[in-house]
Length: 114
Length: 110
Image 1 (tube, helix red, strand yellow):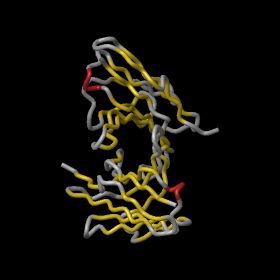
Image 2 (spheres, chains in turn blue, purple; image 1 turned 135 degrees about the horizontal axis):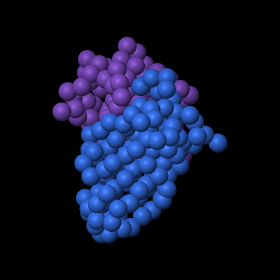
Image 3 (tube, chains in turn orange, cyan; image 1 turned 90 degrees about the horizontal axis):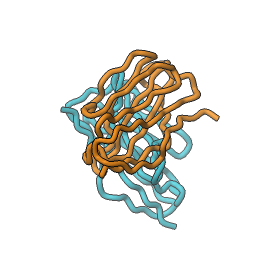
Image 4 (cartoon, each protein chain N blue to C red; image 1 turned 180 degrees about the horizontal axis):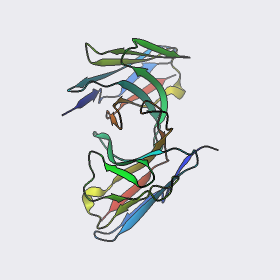
């Protein structure tokens, strides 16, 4: 089944404790992206990647890091999480046929930083 | 900066009626616009795409219009069903990114 998977689905952590949220897709998509979703603000892009070893900042990159060493994986790293990073996070990918392609979203990771 | 507005209030309609959701935007000239459906606790699911040179797109009971002069898209669900209850997101597209609205929650009552 074609899908985007994320782990963990739920995470409660404390301020300053480094964490990684994994994202993997099995559709051979070149483009992958991370979003956060907060009430009333919609989905905001954190980082995106056009291909392996090619990443770029989205609209809200502060406090986050990403890496793209393999085509299928795009982990999101929070080196020193803070309470304002409490949010619902989504990973997405799309086919390489151009920007107008639909994005496929993962199931989401609900992160709480105490 | 770019701004997308979708009705923040929930839209309540009766089963069988047509639901119409609005997406307005400013300070942007998107090459295309997409609509997604999001159920509670789940990731958005793509529904329709309409390009800047298209006025209207249809898919089964769904219809999307795109007016680049008014900077507005309308999303219609005809013969609505309780199963259509969800939050609907519009997204403006450029080369490498999508800019999402906050979504409108639709509730279809039997």
